[in-house]
Amino acid sequence: MDTDVTLRLEAYLAGFSDLASVLIVRIRPTQGLTPREEFVLSLIDGMLSVSQILEATPMRHLDTLRVLAEFARRGFITEREPVVAPKHRLARVAR
Image (cartoon, rainbow, N blue to C red; front, side, top):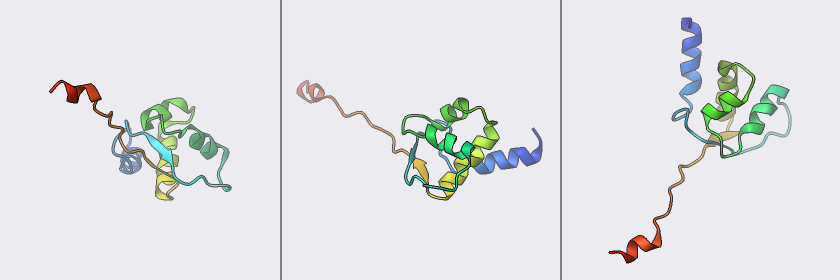
């Protein structure tokens, strides 16, 4: 991988905690997206991680990351807060 690609990849990834981060749509733009951007946006459903989105698109990973980074910069998407499973009520009874 050449230096320019590596630097761009690092810059795009800097906007996310890690590739396991699950993304959600904050603001859905109503116009001005390319078909590729619309496709990537359609994959952001609050269930898929960055890594899963990269695998689901036929685009190069670098191109998909560029789109995701731009969406994040423009405030269209954000990372979902981690879901913490509630403690089971029976755990309290056992004490």
